[in-house]
Image (cartoon, rainbow, N blue to C red):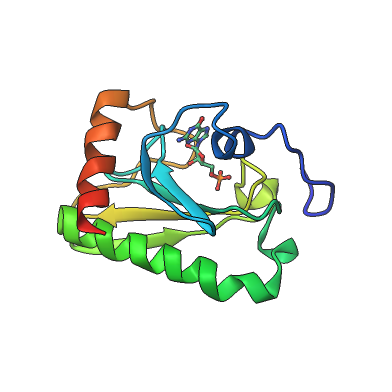
Length: 143
Ligand code: 5GP
């Protein structure tokens, strides 16, 4: 999928936002929703998506950036507090050649641990929902 094009309201994150698909929810307010990635590349892999319907960083409204990034930072801080990783990695992909697979703008937050390899994007197996819910609760408690 190219960078240009119309927002598809049937994408999986839009369904999660509307409550039509489940997620292991970490945080939600009027600006953003945070939940666990079901194919975690590291333990604790979390996604933060804005409520604005846009596909990539290129079509995200500039005046909404500050509020959204404040949520991304807050969730990253809670991930650090919950899991005490050695590093916290943020990833943000735009367009299929860049690796984007879900066309609703989002940031990935990945706890990184010394000596622990990260699974490839699109190569990780599906996590157990009970384990994801437990991690989501841990992060939520640290918010
Ligand atoms: P992207 O490739 O667009 O940067 O990231 C999309 C992410 O969404 C991927 O890491 C993928 O594992 C995750 N993902 C795909 N489908 C679902 C889903 O149904 N639920 C959740 N929680 N994550 C998903």
